[in-house]
Image (cartoon, rainbow, N blue to C red; front, side, top):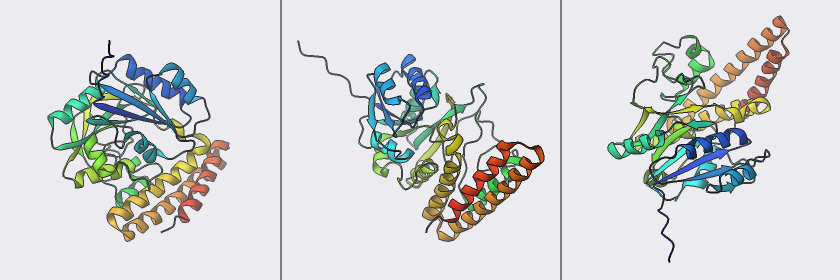
Length: 318
């Protein structure tokens, strides 16, 4: 007898990993322990990991497609490898340090089916203790927003609708609403739209590729909606800790400059660069003085790391 045809997935899921084997396995387990009702397929893009991630995924989840890039392509380029032209009506982009809650991916897909004016949805990111994760950007990226963050105003005045607008820190994440941007750690987008937009802009290595994508979705006349009813636990940045931290801070600075130059022009981008240089100098001073006063070596080292960030940010070419 001929084999029954395998149904094509309606949802293609991309997970990018860089030395996050333990978290990646937990993420995949959470998906397959409570799989979506919609037909789905998962692709893991490994960005040159050295921790055995590829072998572990292939051994424990043979149904998962694995793409080995051989190098760290960055977040956007790696996701494009998995998704552009992939089958399905929807694409899901998940960080490897997510633990998915049952039904969340179906909720996202149903919402897109029911709301024709929405192009992309973001799930609700939770801390391990179940509280909403607040430190992801939800507002407009401007040099003003950069200034509030670099000068610590957004951190000091979290309930201010002015200083906290970029992170929407006065909003407790307890309702579904349209936003300027949703977080690229967990988003679901219409496949046709992602393909038409060309996916993530690959000029970004890491950070702001989701900001850029959401801006282009809105420019196409569609909304970006946050769904408080689609939760997932998020480890938040485990692949960018330790020795990699100064590089990641620099990449964040660089990505914000790329975004502002693209959408607001050179003057706005140069203003943001000057603010970031000031912010790095402030952090060098604060952490160095704190390290001397408390004799805590880790704080002194943090001050030194911002010297690396300062030097790299100063050298960003136009």
